[in-house]
Every structure is written in C-alpha cells, then in structure tokens.
Image 1 (tube, rainbow, N blue to C red):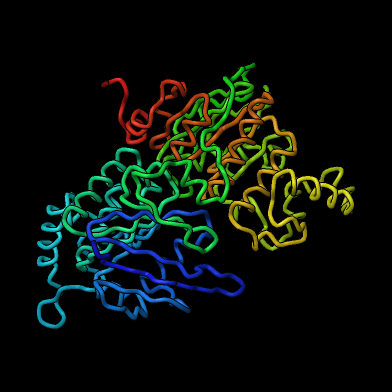
Image 2: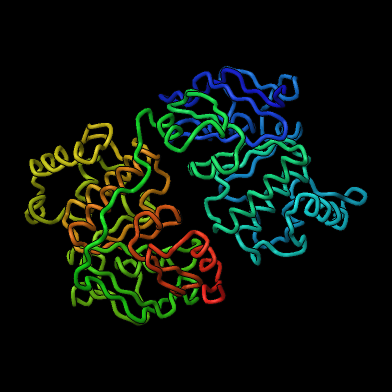
Length: 506
C-alpha cells in the first residue's frame, strides 16, 4: 500500500543541537503509527515540523503523492493534518461547540455566528466516531477524558485525514485509556490515519500497527508491532539492554515510621483539598498514592514538606510532630523531597550541578561554617555524587538548565537520597524522564526502602505505582477512598477507584 504521508530526510537544527538528522517516516491510510524515543530523541520536533510549528532546514514532506510546503499550522490544517497536543488548547469558560469552531466560526451573513449549524455537524461527527459529547456543555464542567475527545473533534471538524496524538494518555484513567483506544480504532476504520507519540511501551504494543524509533535525532528503524517486544523497543531507544521490571525482594516491614491522621487542608481557592486524610507507613515500606491529577495529591505533598499549612490533623515521623513546621524544620527532621515540578521546587536552573547538589543543605556542616562555604567540601561532594548517580555530563560547573530532564532529575535524586533521609517523599519521580533514567531512579527508590526507610510515592503512572509499591492508597476528590495491598491491586481496580467507584460492588 502506498503511504498517504511521507517525511523524507527531515533535518531540523537549533543553536548547538541537531534535533532531527535526516529522519524518515511514512504513514499508511488507516494506520496507527507509533513514534517512540527517549527525551530529546526528536519526536516532538519532527511532529512540529509536520504541523508547521517549525520549518525544517532540509527534507521534504509528501501528502497523497504531492510535495507540501508547510509554513504554519494553518497550512497543515488546510491539507488535512490535525494535531492533538499533550496540553489541551481549550477555553474552559466556553462550550464544547464554541471551542470546536473557534477560529473557523460558521456565520449567517457576514457577522452573525451560526452555532446551530456547528452543533449539528458536531453531533454528526460525534455519532460517527463514537466520541459521545454534548456540544452545549462547558469545558469546565466535563472530565479530562471528554476534553480530549473535544480536541479530537476539533481536528475532525476541520476535516483532518491525518491525526497527530501527542502523549494522549498522560492524564487519563485506565478506563479512559481503553475508551481512547476504541476511538482510535473507529477513526482508522473510517479511513483516518494516526501518528501516536507516547513513552509507554505497553500502549504502543496494544494499539499501533507499526513503530518508528528515534534516538538522538536519528531514525533507528521502523518495525511491525507484531514483530517486536517491550525489551526490543527499549533497547532500540536507549542503545543498550534495559531492565523494564522493577527488581525488589519481598518487603521486611518494621515499626510504624510515619503516621498521618485526620489531615484537612483548603487549597488556594478556599476549597477543601484534603478531607480527613489518614495513613501509616512502616519501616521498609513504599506506600504508593494513585489518582487522577488534581485530586489532592499536590496539596498532600505540600503539607508534608512544609510548603502549605494544614487546617487540622497530625503528621508524625517516629513520634515527632511535624505538622505545620517550616520546610527547613521538616528537612532537618530527615524528610527528603523529590518534587513533582523539578524546575519550580527542585532546582535553581542558573546554579551549577555542584551548587544544586547541596541546595537546602547548603548551610549545614560540612558545606558551611556560619556564613562561609567550605568550597573543598562542595567539590568533593559533587565529584563523589556525579559518577555515583551517573549525572551527565560529568562537569560539576555546568548549569542545571543545560542538562536533559533525566539528568536534572538525577541531581535531585542524588541530593535528597545522599543526605540519609528517614522518610522519602517522591512525587512524580520519573515524570518527563527517559526509559534509561526511569530504570535508575526505580532502583534507587527500592534501595531506600530496603534500608528500612519509609517511602511515600505519588505517581500518575499506574505501572510505576503497581511495580514499586507495597501498598497503594487511591485518592479521589481529596479523600483516600481505599488502601490496597499491591498483590491484590490491578489497573482495573485502581482505575475504578480513581474514577470515584467502589470495589464493594464487584
């Protein structure tokens, strides 16, 4: 079958970076073609070239046999190429219909909006592709999974034949992911073609027909999905064998290390964000917290690390009450924190690797005496941790902002783990990092557990929660709705609880 779309020898450069180096990609009609690779491999850049966000220095794009000259997203949309971005481009105060027609509004005469015509077309498209949306509902009132359907409808409304889906499952529950798979199947059955960007290899194998792997800006190869495996794809992505399964012994629990009781917290808008949260973590235990983002996980971490005040409750580490103490007091009590936003709360990007490796501990011995730094100790500390935690490049004087996401995360992991914590709070510890760095970070978290520390793991990745946790707490609308032993937990059970359901009805 002749491809509907071809990208030939695409080369895109940024200052000092060759993002795409003669990359080739072809897409067949009715196909789901997955595009995978580590952070910085060039996936998003390549799709940005296709959608007209960037202009390639070299290479050609052919669509239905005709060479294209794409100078902007409107050119791509006009020929039938649509893109659903990872972060939705929706106006929350408008209705679904108003969002879909935004920028191409149907009119009566020259000035009057003919929204009824748009609603009729949206209803028709929704029925045809099984998208099931109410055009008159406001975006602010619908769940994330439906918002994604709206983004897909926006592209279909503009008569897209090729759809680029960029990390489409990042914020969905397992049930919503399965619903998306069905929508993708319906789209391809109706003749649409899909380029699917994701870092989740299980999803790639579940839904795609072919897979193209990029590494360091180059095309490593294209394989049929039926002829490959997670291990083979991971090796193509990284260039070496990758251990995908978390290797850990059965936990040997000790005494209760951390106890949280009756925690109530209001968020910055005055709404109840945490409603009577209680749990315990034993020595040598990882308690995972699962939930769709925005259900109180961020506020929980902020309270436990001294970044937000609680209304009431208790937070004890080995009988020491830490609730509503300062962030410095909590850190000095040996609570380590891997924050969900490494740029906002984990690093000073214009500080060097060496300086970031002592951030938050910079005033303590052996790094400082009074107001004076001991620069020899700073250097020794950096030169020990950089190779131990495989931070690249090895130069301690390089600014943190110049490193990849994975290596920025390794700075935080090295700093927090090396200070000998008794309680480790790891929030989205592998967000935005590539498969090689994920393997490394998981190994270090398990090592902390095996030293008898208590670990609270918050992650949007259910596979990470299931593989690392000893018990799993599920949060929904600011409450812990259930706590499961990891042996009895499944993605289906967790997904049901994450959506506000109950296991008691099974």
